[in-house]
Image (cartoon, rainbow, N blue to C red; front, side, top):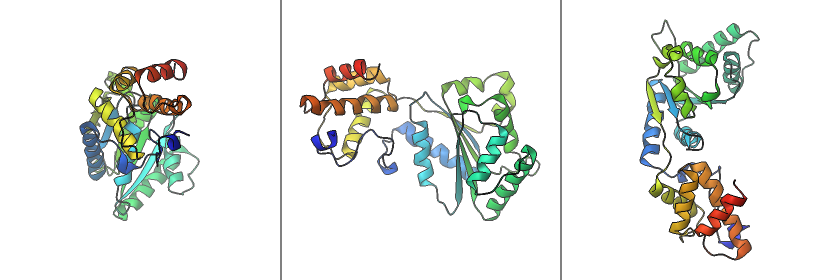
Length: 265
């Protein structure tokens, strides 16, 4: 409803925003470089950050940039991921019927990865929500990267997880896994200036050139969200939905506070 009210041509603050319109902070750009390096050199990259900071969005931006003639990407997000489920998921995404037993499925996956590499393509696997994974699958990751007697990595492996994953991997019990990590990055939340730029970029994407949110409104959004993109999206969308009901042409701090209190708390 608010799109017509504000004469917008697209919906801002939505999940399906085009990859070409992503707001690029220096940190986001640095993460894209590490994604590319992990894929090109078949490395293990661990990316952490608070929930809603934009890890999965950054990964989507990276995947959209991959040359399909040189890479094949697999995305796995499973809170109960086990080694067997991992092998099954890779094979299913390849359109291959997995063998029943875990060991057989593992060998079957290795054969498929070899076939992909024989076509001069690099497999790149992204495991999302990895902070929910148990020790078994994290331990298995160490063996996923072994190929030809540990002389060659068969894939680029990207692990995304919330900040607690970083703390998990520092524990002695995960020392062998941590020793396999070649790249790490912790994606921070936006600061106050970046929060304003993020809001502006979404409005511009939607075709809105005015500053719909006052400075005080953005201060309130930043205080509520802590600079986390997902929270910014929620409160900004709620404010835009509310504005037409009260015939408001801009969003002030009172509207933001009201939405936080009535819609988001």
